[in-house]
Image (cartoon, rainbow, N blue to C red; front, side):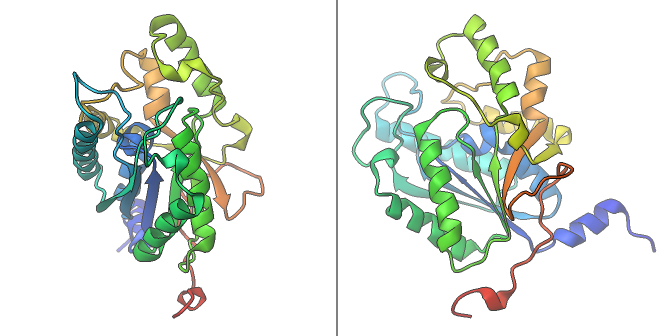
Length: 277
């Protein structure tokens, strides 16, 4: 019997694991929701590590940071379930906020080695073949910290991760968002500094995820305590953000050529290269 392309693809990725490392609840959905849905549809087992509970996010009414953090963690876990994520782990760092003084225990003030080691421990436990983290193209300082910590953790881990990607906000797309919001909703804190995104020529991987748009939008709605950056966007710009995933492959290093149209999940680490085995 002839295999369909879908069946062959699912068989090729059976047993493959993807770990997404983010800074705040909603990063997994606002940023990477379609990628997680796409990976699950391909047969990958996915997990999310979130560094904070988002205590410095937008609060409804007079919620304390602790109350908001509890709400946002519940939203994270509900959205992750809808995105077919197999497990969610939340670290004990606090949300630093976009700028200004940070609260005690904030991620931005944590010793970098402590952040790296916690991410490394989750890599060694989950043993992902693919690791994804944010490119920090939105200018958030916590996103910068978690990007650098994740890349360093991959190097320190006993488990040999095959492929590592930065989930990107291309400069061309971010410029369109900034231009639109500057005119229609200038209250966004992201507009107060330079938000360059990732230069388009550094993008290595462009994935069509239009088939998952409805599920992505449902997951976005589960983060009800927060304002979505896609609210009220014109349809064309909305689809540009939610129907296509842009990534930069950093491991194995990109050497040029035709852009990838999917994650590189074909490389498996040899178990003999894992220390202690």
